[in-house]
Image 1 (cartoon, rainbow, N blue to C red):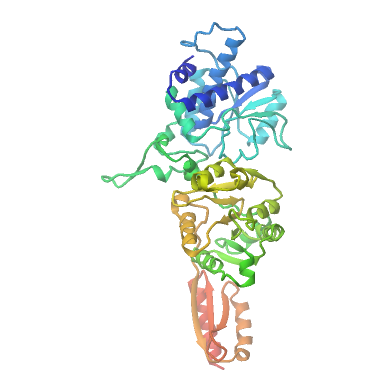
Image 2: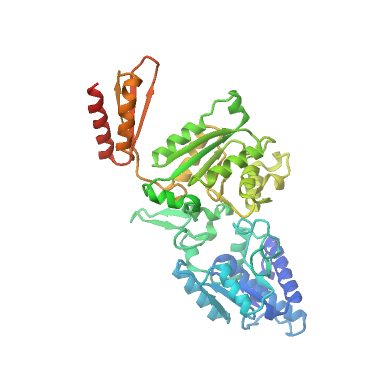
Length: 498
């Protein structure tokens, strides 16, 4: 059998160890369940391509152990025996579809093609074809890997089956070592710089593999297997901002290009006045510069319940919540636990985050890395870039910033707004700001400004004084320049009559 032969002849001892462990899991599964009640979920990606060939080898070796074949590994070819599920989606890359059907033809794979979402499709499939175990190509670092083990029962509310994850502990490097060693075909997108493939709506080539074409000025990309740091595998995957259900209708009823944000600073030092909060105001300015509206900024205690209560309030009333302070290794860093409590989920070790911490701190770390790497289970996405020492943590519509000063905030902001990592912070139409000054008293301007505020509901009209006896500055802000100018002209005309 060509897969087993290629691995056994390889000098890569690490790959051999991972291969043998995966084969053991496959053989164990085939011993526990009748093959008619076992399925394989294939999606055309690199991980499931690895698993396809592991299953081919594992099934053959299982047959050898059972005495059904003679053990000659060299020229073994057979129809793939496991029922294979393929979820076809309108947003899938055409190259993924083509590769999937071509692979099925080459290896005798009988596809059960489903066009519903994963959960609904499984419900229909398992009702018609009883299935007790499903092989999945889940690896550490995948968003769905949190809390899973090699054998993991399906989650509550899902159809009942055993999830089998033979390559759960494989790294990005292991995947490509296997594919290249075994010389098997994989989707052509990986040769075009794609390192992690989702839908056409959220996937781009990995910018870290970009090569500038000096002749045509066009971007070209090296193959995926040339990415040296596997922790940056998902750098080409963009997360689109989704509005929470509680506010989406309200947002649409207002100006469609407005996005609201809340800012939460965590730190007893801020509240005691021993440390001046610089990040909150700086973040306000940055959000304002991309056309976002900050609806609230709060500074709270370094306490799990305080964080949980504030995040719970803000995540349902703002499109995005930015949290800073209390994210780190100290005993007072409670933000991550507070976010988990706000969403009602547990903390679980995140293998991808663990790799980052181990790489960053190494032997200097005095705490258990598994404890340090605990993140909110099932809702966490790591936003990573080569310029960031540690990836940012995103839990649905909450972003946990690790910045402690303006320079670090600038680095993280540049990453979030980088066009290559689009849609984390989508740009909106910029605000137009104008102002005028007057020597009139507050009493003289209060009634006219109140009246004009009603006449220009889309324009924010504000006032402030630098000093108690100094002139009054009146500000006008909105996204329609003509309306801003009209409001300022109306105020100027009204006040000039006083």
